[in-house]
Length: 132
Image (cartoon, rainbow, N blue to C red; front, side, top):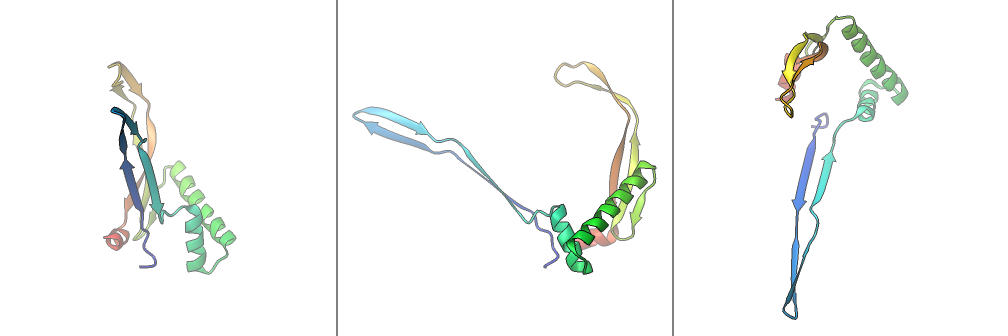
């Protein structure tokens, strides 16, 4: 439908060899591999602002201000170790990862991986059902 976000990526690789026999001498030319990468309908922040403006009857400037306020509010809550639940949409939360030891795969050397906070998002049922 009109509200469906579609992301389509097309990758095309090709390599072409051209061979010619000039007076019993063979000439071979290899054209380089060419990569075409086409993205269709990948929504970015500007596109989201436009959709908010359309759905809420706001100007683009008002929509961007509202979106920035939502993002800032979620960020502030997560910084304060709070979670943010939008019923039906999902829950943003912070998971603390303890420091641990790891191994450098190139050298085999043991290294210490620092503790860090990791942002998580758990999808709500209504959103999960909508995309399935």
